Structure formats: C-alpha cells, structure tokens
Figure 1: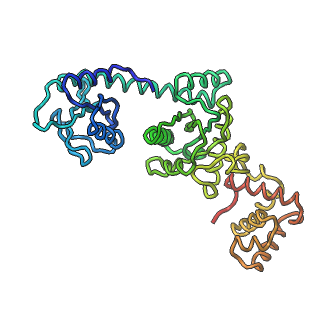
Figure 2: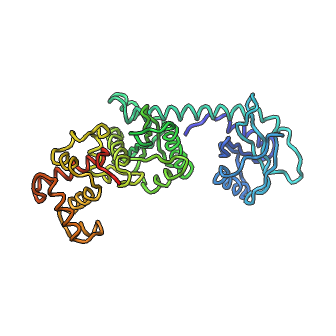
Length: 386
C-alpha cells in the first residue's frame, strides 16, 4: 500500500540528527514507520516490535509525555506520546532508553510535527479503506458497468493482486430476524477478518458492507474455511455466519457473491445442519432452495403431498423418521441405524405415516416430492419441533 512519504522521511531525518533508532506506533500499538536499524541488535529489536508490539499494553503517558516501559525481549523503551491539537493521543514515538538516562529535547520538540504527519497518514489510510469498501460493494452488487470499473480500479490501485480466480464471501447475522446491532456485528466480522489477514500475512483481501446489511469479503485465492471459522467463533462477532462462493475470474466475482449469499442464507435457514462457514457446494440443495422467499412460505406453498402430510401429522418423531427414511433411499436397515431405533419401531412409524400419505411410499415421484417438500418446509420453519 502506498503511503504519504513525509512521515518516513521525518523519522529518518530525526534519527540521523539525534543518533537514535526511532519507531512510530499508531494508537493500536502497531508499527507504522521506523528509521534505519543497522546493527544486529537494532534489527532484532525492530523485528520484535513489528511482530509483537500490537499485543503490548498502552504506556502510561497520560500524566506526562514520556514514559519508560521495559519488555523482556527488547529491554527498556522510551514512549513519547504524540497528540493532536485537542491533546488526544494519536500514537507514540519509541526509542531505546539511553543508558545514561539523559533526555533528548530534540525528540520532544519534533513530537508535534510527527503527530501531524501521523494524523495525515491515518486520514489517508482511512480514506483508502473507505474507497476500497465502496469498490468491493460495486464489484459484487453493482451494475455491469460499475462492476467493470470497480474491477479495474481494484487492480490498478493495488487493493487486490492480479490472480487467476477470486472467491467471494457473504457474512452477517440471521437475515430473518436481524438484531439491533446487525450492522455493527457484520462490520466487526469484516474488519476482524481483514485485520487478521493484514497482520498475519502479506496477502490481499478486500471487504465492504451492503445496505442490507450483508458483509462482503473477496479473496484472490480459495478461502481456508477452518481459518475463517476460527475468526468468526470469536465472541466479539458471534453470532455472525458466512457463506463462501466458488473461485471465479474477477469479471465474474459477482456470481461468486450471489452463490456465497445463498450459502449464507442456507446456513441460517438450517443452522443445525451447517457450519458457521458454509460453502456453496457444501450447502447442496439448501443453497438452491434459499433462492425462494422461504420466510413467507405457508403450507399452501408446499407440494400437495407435503401439505397433506403436515396437515395430518404433527409428531416431530414421525416426520424426522420419514425424512431419515427418504434420506436413506428407502433403506430400512440404514434408517434404523441412523435413528438408533429398532427395526420394528421403524416399521410401526412408517405404517402410521402411510395412513397420512396419499400414495405409495415406494413410488419414486412421491418420494421426490416428499423429500424436497419436507426440506422446503423445514427451511421455512413449518415442520413442528419438540
């Protein structure tokens, strides 16, 4: 990512003027600029700061501008607070504490300029992030012209690397019953994923949020599902779930997002049957059925055989038995094993079901209608539960 160069130059000029090795950290304690570190000891200290400083506690600089903090791997460090005109902390200038304990007035004098340059960089970064979010939404949900322009901009402005395929992800809370903090939860999930990728690799990924709100992520590679599951399992973003679309060329990534959105819907329609991250292929028929306005379905929207069955039977055990029997292709032995019931119990239940079904359960067309119809009913919340 390109940055305004003034902060880097100012830090290096100050380092040469003072003979100090300098590092600038932002409010999150992440390193954002540093001077040349030549000696092996200086480089070792810098590498440790780059890898671990964002996990450190903030220095206690509220009562005075400078504070010395000691960390086992790097020794004592001087933290000089960088503040905006309203005296709000925007970051820190960090340097190894001198052995003689002498202050360095030049660092204190340079603090206002460094703070101003750091704020400019932060504003630039925030503007670039917002621009990336708008392009992400346009790429996946815009008109053909908007998608084409967004794709070109994302590559030209180096938000995304040029790759053979791109994978879209849709994520958010339950679309049928959005919670008051739906947008905040979705935004946290998108930001947390982007932050994880940024801080653990040099890979690129972009994200945004639609007005709905549904979160969007686009990866220039296949998504590692177990890794995304670990990110979304964090209490801060629960109960967000995600759907993952297939790998497609950048010009077709909107289609990947459509399928990701359907997989995400399917995972919410049947959360007990899907992981919190569900792929389009893994969602199977549920993803196809998710195209339907299942939230508005009533019994009259179901196939006649399913409608008649649900009107006559309200026993969850009987309906679960029929679904398992149909899942097993009418194999009684397999059905008994899956339900962990005796074969005679299965036959008893099937006999009761046959009285409520018009037709022969061995008929393929009837089985097809019942199997698909019951799945539709379950996704629509029309199947009674205990």
